[in-house]
Image 1: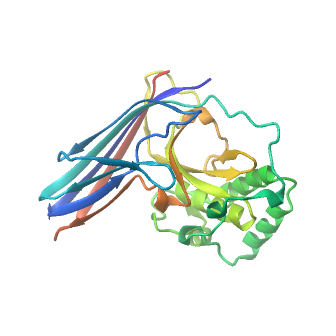
Image 2: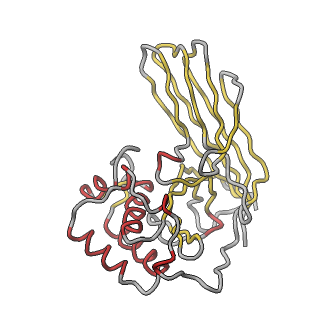
Length: 277
């Protein structure tokens, strides 16, 4: 059974001295596809701006805007209502042969998915390659990452690489995803980073609001795009809302901006999820 989930994502920047000008991009619009249906979506931005929407190279909806006058704060409210998938229909042929990969961009390493020269990591890559099918290797990689890392908010930054995460053995969802992607690509399995939201309650009551946050997980090509969440392991499609895909976090960051000014900035983010049906 699919769910209908409302999302409110509030991002606020405050500047100690007015920013003279700022240039910004938002990726907070849920993806419309054959499985996920977007019922409502919209943005409220203060100070008021003109939005310039476009789809990026990875087909993620981007809203670009500039503020060309002094401002001491920037507030972005993204609201959406999404009908999530009930589940994924697995094709009759669920996994290709190892030599059928054709997604070069999802196989190439990036700065964030660089692997350490570690014997345990190399042993796992060999084990993945020896798996009967790519699909079984994907499940094995996610379990390895989940058991190797400890979830600890604040332990890493958006610039933390998979190699650095492996060294400290802790991180957040984007770190779990980067390490899982790195392992899969090293084993020859195309993998991509998914940005979106995750409803944290397995049986959330109707109209119940819960605190959430931007979430990241992984899709790997195994003859179809197999979704796996190395942070939580149990992937229940109705609890996930997809914003977009990319090679790593940098391709689908929810907000990217630069500003000109002499002051410092402070950011606050608040995400509320509500199950409507």
